[in-house]
Image (tube, rainbow, N blue to C red; front, side):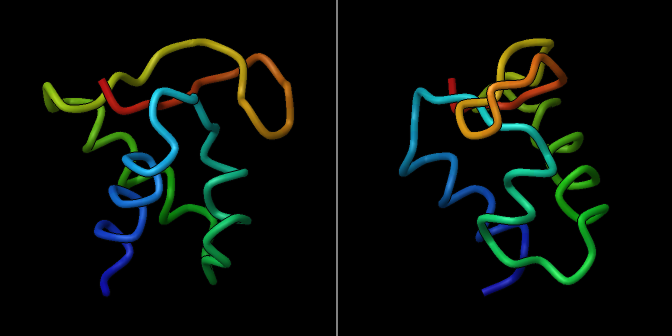
Length: 69
């Protein structure tokens, strides 16, 4: 499964929770954390996802997060 599919599936399974890129990268054991940022930025332009300022469900920090809409 490619990384984009992993992130899509993770967000879908955990909907409606919001997650930051760093926590997504850790949860999916991505080799390069930047992969999460690149993919969530792209997903955030679709109508299926919302990428906005918010609080991450895992780390509890206020930052840019994404969720399934």
